[in-house]
Amino acid sequence: MSLSRSGTVPEEDFSPPLDSEIRDQLGKIRASHAFDAPDRAQKFLCYVVEEALQGRSDRIKAYSIALEVFGRNASFDAQNDPVVRIEAGRVRRALEHYYLLAGQRDPVLITIPKGGYVPAFTRFNETAPKADSPPPQNYAPWLKSKRRALGLFSALVMLLAAGIWTVDQSVFQRFQPTKSRGGADSIPKLPRVIIAPFEDITGVPSSALLARGLTDEVTSQMARFKEIVVVAGKSPVTSPAALAASSDLPVYGLEGSIRLDQDRLRLSARLINRADGAIVWTKAYNAKLGQREILDIETVLAGEIATALAQPYGVIFRANASEAVEASSKDSRAYVCTLSYYSYRATLNRQTHAAVQNCLKEVVSDFPTYSTAWALLSFTYLDEVRFRYRLKSPGRPPLDLAVEAAEKAVELDPSNVRALQAAMLAHYFSGDVNTALIVGERAFAINPNDTEFAGEYGFRLALSGQWDRGCALISKSIAHTVGPTEYFQSAMAICSYMRKDYPGAEYWARASNLRDNPVYHLILLAIYGQMGKLMDTKVEREWLMLNAPEFLEDTRKEVVIRILRSEDQEQFIDGLRKAGLDIPRDKCIPTTGNCRILGDESRQNAKTGAFEVAVPLR
Image (cartoon, rainbow, N blue to C red; front, top):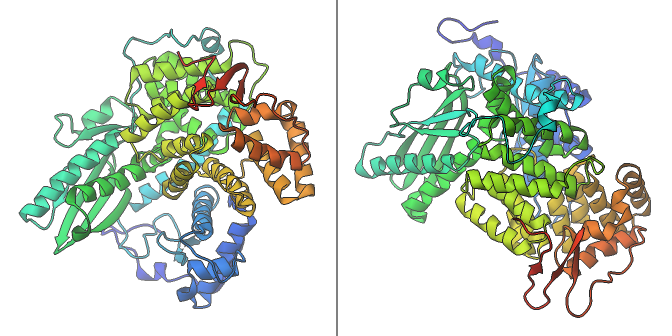
């Protein structure tokens, strides 16, 4: 079936699917390996689908789901217990993953639109439009691009891990952080977004002022994300052809319009692929003018747009995945490396770590002034320290390399939040916690809409003893990120553990499901120890002995390099002791202070709380 010249489709082709067809589709989804969802998420999906088919859509609320699916009692409060919201997000991502990889030609599309938990059922094929809108002519290319994105994005990392996508090994042998083969000012071309002035539909002075203000604020906040290039609509270089000629990465246009109706503001925004006119993303925002100042409204709305589009794992990253993988230029190859890092970051899998690190080494060699690549490279070196990857690899200590790469990133672009994030972590794992948090606060002030950074900064705050603020930032990042949340869910597990909410800690840890990461198993081991789950503690101990024995050789050291305060360290270690680990009492907790073990010793001043660091960030 194809669209007619007028862009319409015969009405009978879009009749609602039958109940039997929906149930068959549900069974097909659940049986597919591409539907990557745990049992509780699958139970969630089955419940909401069956309730909708039985005509009880009005009962599909967070409260009923919590009681019927998750076994919560009548005192359940959705504001304080996010279980339903989190599982809904997991199901949405799993469904998208399934349809992108395995269900491209399935007859029925099952979705759970955001804003509620009631599922939607539509007939699904290459040219099917949305159920509530006429079929646009450019729907098919948009759908194809969206389908390819995740599949190619995932395939990229598998190719890297398998060694199929190889790079010149001599590059790594001669790699030095301060030297490179590239030119003095070389950085790769990046995806570009042309932001056009927002259209004023109302046509009154106040609405015209709002349109200009929102355009400026969106441009400013989008530009804070250094993974893209933002071009203002009034720039002399606005031709898509002129922009595309210098790069094989796509050029996007961001358009918007505002409408005032008495005291209400409605902002509609959309992102368009300038090459073919396909609508990549669209959303409407509403605000009540009487509740906040105009400037506050502009800031909030612009922040929501910037977060949705420009953050790692955001709309632009996902939309670019297919084009970047298919391109062959050095620029697009560099961009693919950043995509591969974030795919690795979603699971922290040690099998893909080396391939991603080597790819980033080549990027900084080809593009020596690419600050973001230096920052991501620093993260991979730090992962060798905190996750004990590649411990026996020859060469300089990974912490030294992480410090140098972070320094280079900040030197190249002091306003790059990813570079400051690398510096924050390098300071933290070098033992200079006070400086780490100062750098983190600076980066957070630059771009509070960067959920990837905000969650990591919150984790550092929490582990340094600022549990309330830190855990609140982590929770907010989970709620607002459009990408994988597993790493931050493991952070929430520690937050719950420190509040002695061990069932909550177990929930968050299991939700994170970072099964290839040793810290994930260490967290579960402490939780199970506190809960007295002896069989589960045995399973976790055996995993660590088999896959990461170094975490059992000096467990206290592994705890101390992460958790700052001695009382917090002891609370975590208490769970590990109850899980069967023989961890001697700390000999470095005299009345004058306590020790942090970092390879080289550093001590915490008992009066000031500051650390005297043996290995400072240079």
